[in-house]
Amino acid sequence: MSAPLRVEVLVLEACPSAREAYELATSVAGRLAPGAEVRRVLVESDDEARRLEFQGSPSILVNGKDIAGRYGASSGLACRLYDGGSGLPPEWLVEAAVLRALGLRGLLFLCVANSARSQMAEGIARSLAAPGLVVASAGSHPTRVRPEAIAVLQEIGIDISGQRSKRVAEIPVADVDTVITLCAEEVCPVYLGNARRLNWGLADPAAVEGSDDRRLAAFGKTRDELRRRIAALLGEPLREGEERTC
Image (tube, rainbow, N blue to C red; front, top):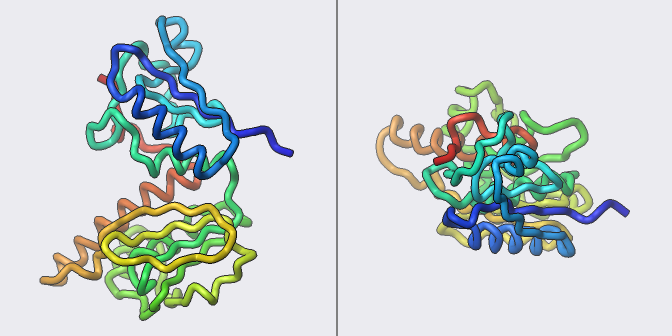
C-alpha cells in the first residue's frame, strides 16, 4: 500500500487566513483522500522558514511540495497573497495539488452541451497530459463543438476541430478516476461511476451574446482560466507573478 497523503499548513501567528487555510486543507483532503494526515505547522523563526523553504503564511504543502510551486529561496517571515490578492489559496489549487499527489489515470470533464467549456478543457488537458493519462469530455445533452472554442484554442496552438460532443454514457467507466464538472448556473450531469469529483463552476461563454469579438473574448477568458487550472492539476507550477508575499 502507498503511504498516506501528508498535508502541512505552514502559518505565522501574525498573519490572517491561518485558520481558514487549515480548514480548507482539511476539507479538501478529507473529500479526495480520506485518511490523509493534515497538520498545522507554526513557523517561528527565519532559520525555520529557510529550512522549510517557507513561501509565506499560509503555505500548504502536499507530501512536502508547495501547492503553487516553489521559486527557490524562502520568503522569510511574511504573509502570503495568492492570485487576485487573497490571503487564502483558491480551493481548486488545493484540489489540484492533492490530485497530483494521488495520481491521475483517467480524467473526464462534464457539462451539459459538451460544446464549449468541457471541449476546451479536453483539448487543453490532452495537450498537457503525460503519456498514459486518458482524457475525455461529455455532456448530458450534447450538441456540437462551438466554432468559438475551436478558434480560441487555435490561438494557443491546440486543434480541437476533430473533437465531437458526446453523451456521458459513451465514456467507459473503467477509464475514469477523476471527474470535473464545469457547470455554474446549469445543473451538471451526474456521473455514476466510482470516481473522485470536483466542480469548477465557470460561466458558460456560449451564453454570451453580442458581436463576434465579444463572444470570442468570453471564450478566450474561459480558455485562459481552464489552462491555468489544468496546468496546475497536471503538474505545471504557477508562473512567477501570479502570487506574492507582503
